[in-house]
Length: 326
Length: 265
Image: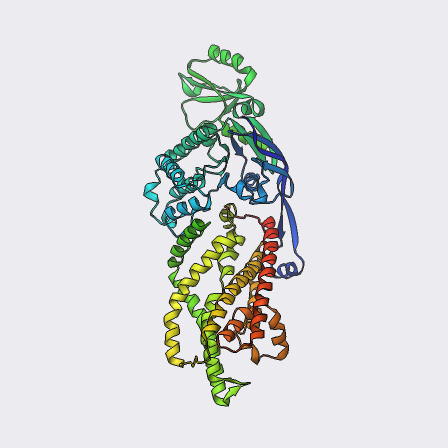
């Protein structure tokens, strides 16, 4: 079944932000007459996500990602447009809807700060009406993946950011939601921790067929999990499609990396734009248009004493960066 | 639902114990004004014999009972919820399939109440031996009649405070509004001065307001100072205000949530 899980049409959110200049008289004036500035956080965004998809939601800071997630989870009322998730209008906050989705945000959310996480887990079991056997099973699975047990007895305020994040994700998944909104789910985690969460999310998606919409600043999260990405910039949708198509559409370039037998003596500027690559200082890179790759490669091979040559796609970070700037 | 309440209770009870210093400050705050009123009015009554028919012992019994009633009927929802709306920490609770104010908020207040009652009891006993009130006019019937109305008054007071707190969805100055609301309570509940000593016009207004149900009405009921007709009238007012406060809260909350901006996280 490929039912639409998330359906968004012309979704918009404009915040009214009070503004005033600094200084005493401005303060007095604003007491009597407030000035407001409209901030268009999200403007006429459309997309549809099919059940079981994992979609990466990307954009620079302030692009409107979190605002969109907040609207889809029901926290915010939009100022325009519609959305439906699993057939519900999110901001009506119907208990049946809230029981079938989760929103995990980077900061403290579902866990009570002053008491051990285990108490919050049991509270959520009751709130989401999870039967004991299902709860035990789910907890066991989460514990296996995330190694929760050592964290459960400590007050949440004494956990590290990464430990807290693990608990936040786990507590948000206890009720086995069908739709997951994840805002920076791997923030604060070390490399192993990030990889674990990724693996866990992929497994969860495969096993339950849940729909996942996630934002992340770690491109590795996105490339590892998502086949499809949605890019939003200044509140507007910029790209919606396959992650592999992105470079073709936005930046139809390839990177040719060459290692020369005598490193610095040759000028490569005649072949294409030279680019820096910090990871491999031995190699020199030139960026060329995708259709020119074969021609330029054969020229390079003919002209220069080449020790090693590679042809790769530009890093996805650079492509997305380019997409933002368009 | 029972399990939810039970687990909420466990969490909130455990949380309350984390704030012992906070609790002590609240307790002092709570005690100070009734004890000052008690001391001031008793000394005036002692000098003059009585104030408008209120003898020194009347004042003592009135304020000793007020300390108990206040514990039962008051709430601190503005302090436990106001900031959550403003700093966005309500978000986590808002997307849970239970009403934040009517479940967690309520349980939190009751847990706090239990703890303050534990702290207040020894202090009350000390005051008892200090002031030696004469409780001879108190009857079992009065107490039994007062208990349900005190519980009703707690619910009404909670809903009204929750309504005021929900104004935080509109304004960041909700604490000033609450101060004004609190001044109304001080005046019309009979905390500042027993309502019978107030000008006639204030007494007439107070009859129709919910605030007297918090203190004056149950205190006088326990002290056996109300006629059958007055008792009836109090109960009728309690049910009317229960309806009004429930409707009012529901309306303000529903519209407030639409304006929630989930700032921060």
